[in-house]
Image (tube, rainbow, N blue to C red; front, side, top):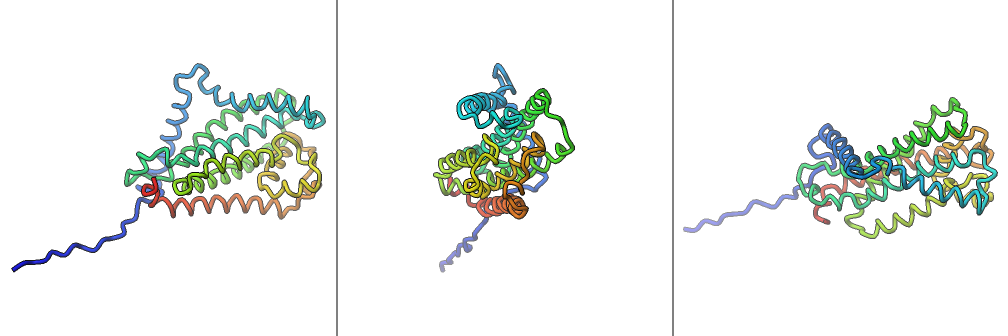
Length: 282
């Protein structure tokens, strides 16, 4: 008499969550990986951490020459060299963190395939490592601002608000792009083009008031525009035109903040949704 063995039904076993192993463990790993990557980047180099300053300073020097001697846009702007360096360093943080994060999950394929590894740590560690670079660069920017003769005001206390908003946007974009890249490999190229458009479409190289009103109406559709203009007023030039004087309503500032929060929430949601499937797409 033969007996038939029945195989148990196949179960749909989900992959690890973005914070597999618990949030506390994920935070510990995040810090360790970010610090290790930061040290590894400059280990054995002749200039060490000074290389973190090299790229923004070189870009600053070239653009300062172009916009003060060739186009002369900045020649009539108070404290333009300080404003230019301040803007370049902050935009470079956003650009470097997001462009590096796009391919970060795929680049770490080995650890992604480990069942209990918290995958959200990968793009978040990229943002944190870039944040370390930003902190170093801001020390140099602060020294330059004071040496230039910019007078500190109480509005400097608002800089953490500026930095927090930029960090929220950067984190959201980084998580969103890193989650989608395994499916859409063109994203790295597309985002590289978009960050270039954003660089010129944000008042980084020029003050917002030099743009004609028609163009200004287009520029304010970019949520980074009111943020960078506020950074200018708060830190560099309190006498710069207010957003209201430039035709930018309070609702547009609120909308920019809402966009930042929404992008961050969307990035987290998409990453949580895609995390269990990422290994299958590599």
